[in-house]
Length: 455
Image (spheres, rainbow, N blue to C red):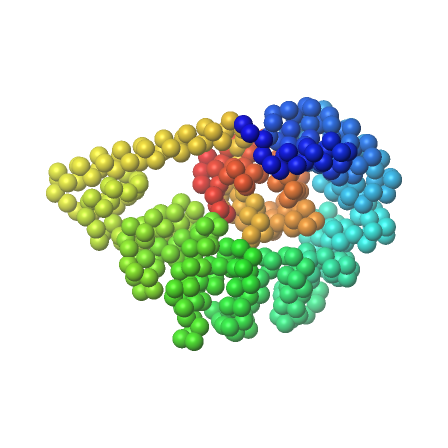
């Protein structure tokens, strides 16, 4: 296979002694060239003096469950932290907080590491990390006051996740009095500092349907801002307002465009709304084939309401329209003569088997390299498990917190890895290639957009 231009450029930099380029090549060996040991050994060597290499070394050996390297990686990280390297201090704090790399959980040592990073570097991640510890109160007594204090210090260095956290506390009335305008003000700052996903939060507050601030134009403005950043659900909501809003706002053509862009980004709701639009024919030319295709995709991505609309399409069409699709054998078939019914069922069985065989082949290819128990959707800031449950992801501080179970996990956005400290499970997530792999269960799950398709 011809080497791509990016790798060639990195190799040229590495030849000139660029350490970051050498680190990138080592990671590439582990992830894509099948040279795991060689890549890890190189990262170990670079980690003697370089915190970036040590950071990536930790992520790689955790992702691959290379326990034989845990002790050495921990010692290198600890040494760099003692040398007052910022990233090493953050990593060491996370190791103690989560109890990984064979190290027992020690929340006091974790906070100590984060405090050092604050004292030396005014580290935004460190402020956020301590704030999150007190906010969630899993390993210490929950203290919204202390959480707010650390989040607020994070905002003073322009850390977007801290601004988002302050906004949520104003929104929920935690420690501070509930204040929607202040919440929006902090969301706006987070947006300006790069956390574009908060556009959906602002838009939702202005959305008339939510009976909070009731400003249709403002809601549309913020959904549009998020849409410009390719945030799928912002595009979906922008389309919704353009379809259903006031006369001076409605723009059916643009609404369809928003839905289509959101669908390409994997939004289940966009597929669903597109399906209904093409089924009804009110804002776009009626097309039952396109309607069915979008509704089936929405159902595949977890929108159960789509099933009723697909059934309605089936009732209004003849048998041929049913068996010409990939509708499952159990789907509704309209009343026909015995001969037509038999022919339709036989054809449906054939189509279903073809579809399943395609899926089997896809999963075989995926299983050759990995497998899964959930999926990170960066656009909505959630970890979505195999049951479709959503969990909040704080990618800035690297934590996932499940409000229902109280579980805390570690999430590394750069390597798409999740470690659950309570269940002692580690999951590798490769969004680009469409799969997730659980190293403990060996389970493979194929994903698309923000949903799990199946194992």
